[in-house]
Image (cartoon, rainbow, N blue to C red; front, side, top):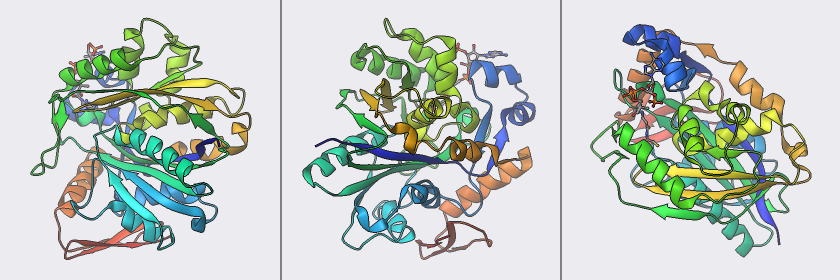
Length: 368
Ligand code: COA
């Protein structure tokens, strides 16, 4: 039985901060952000948004019939509760059956890749069932920090089924190593990050797991787009040229880091640039989660992937956004941090999936 990714979708908030605006406010040469780090914009969650609403926005367009889903894997490193899985809130918003199993997975930016492989195994062991794999994160490092320029927010959703229309996936090669490159203790809002060390740990994991092959693209986890250049330069074979690199960075540089989903934004970039033409082609995928686990696996696009490749919708997600002033960005993130510390909260009115209130720490959402 062939099991794999039937459909994929991404969601980014409708507001962003242009890094020119950030550079001017922080008195930094904009070339450092745009050329040195490789980013153009960072997406900023709206007042009504959190990881649950973003996950719902990413998932809804790829669900034809909610009753077909039997399992939800929700990967995040910006969880809203230590005990309750964010996927339970998502389960209600998506109107899924009460018999659905829902779990949350965590291992920095790697958990989504693990969720994908677990979901494939689950569907193989439960013929006829479907699993929804979703990640949603807000990458928040704090104002005036070295990581500020590498922030972002967004979600990825994938439907895993038999006879997948998008891609099949091979089991990966993993490398696990206990390193203090990036972690967020329970007492902290922002991660402890040693950015330079983290780059070294990332490259070490890539060296230990990479499998050479004839790939049109190798998608890399991108905490910032320049990381893809560094990763590519470290390869001893299957290196990409500048044009190929531009494709895998094309979406990430417009959005910033969405943690778990960042690797999959590289894949969305490939799908946008190739509405068709990559049938049967195998793409390299390198996932890295600080702390750390690296995994290299491959993904082969099916002969009919073009039938589930809504390029217009992908592009609309990027074009229908509005730029924020530095004051609006700071207000939005101050609001986000304050709200995440609130046991009681009432949200302003909004459209779409929305967090409308927090009551004694329990979150209340509204569907579209
Ligand atoms: N014009 C062009 N490039 C410039 C420049 C300028 N005026 N000024 C600096 N640069 C380049 C630097 O040469 C450097 O390039 P290199 O890495 O190829 O050498 C790059 O811009 C970054 O400059 P640097 O001084 O290293 O920046 P920094 O000390 O502010 O740190 C990060 C950058 C990415 C390490 C930091 O933003 C960070 O820690 N981000 C978080 C990363 C993360 O999340 N990691 C964990 C998940 S994997």
